[in-house]
Length: 91
Image 1 (cartoon, rainbow, N blue to C red):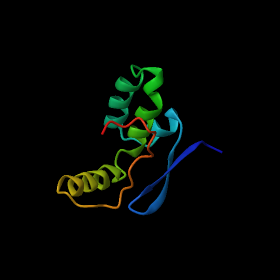
Image 2: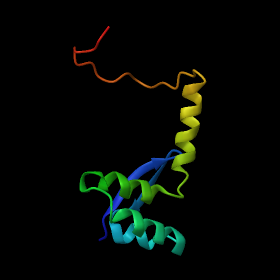
Image 3: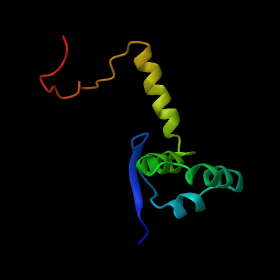
């Protein structure tokens, strides 16, 4: 069974390819060429984030994120909860 990544996009559970080879195989020729140029130069510590970014390309996740950022910029309360406090916050 191939590795997969799971996320929620527009309220739906989505499985994405979870290996470099599977992410690349899901791309068209132009995307794959761009992926090849970039991925071999990504520092090891940044590889998981880069792979997820490429796996999410074309899924609509960016559109969903952009909508949320626009709503936040407009001052809308989207129901986000503050991060847990650690007692070291500056007042």
